[in-house]
Image (cartoon, rainbow, N blue to C red; front, side, top):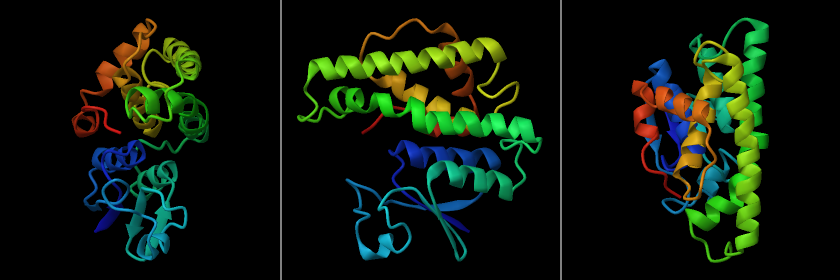
Length: 206
């Protein structure tokens, strides 16, 4: 039985759980990660020295970094979520990487200010800057969906959609005036109807 260590309120843990559910894998999940269970303890650090969730344990094999775990699970089960055609796979990988390196960073200040309400994130100007940059990157998603007419990497649902839709869920859940992005809204509404998506697209939590 696979073990997945991490709290379900973590967006990165949700990526892995949703992937496993889409594939139909059985697993046991253990709560780790603040504020539930501090990963900065020897037991956890022996598995991931970064003290971050999620961590996957597959018998004696240990793996961390959410996007890598997603790829591993899909490859292990020969899932269509991770295409076998090289160029199709490269596009899925491109958007998975973009989600982590370009889409996620801009939202940091706004999410801490508006959802987590951390006192140290009280600068209105920096919050506005975070929202503006976040909106700019979301416009790229809108444009990409105009090209494909379906999913972020092309005509079929893939690992990249799991990562992107969780990010879009956070976008819609953060309280500010959102620009009109009709293709993003349609995409989100379509994907959230997937059976495996339902547990992971509820209320946004810190």
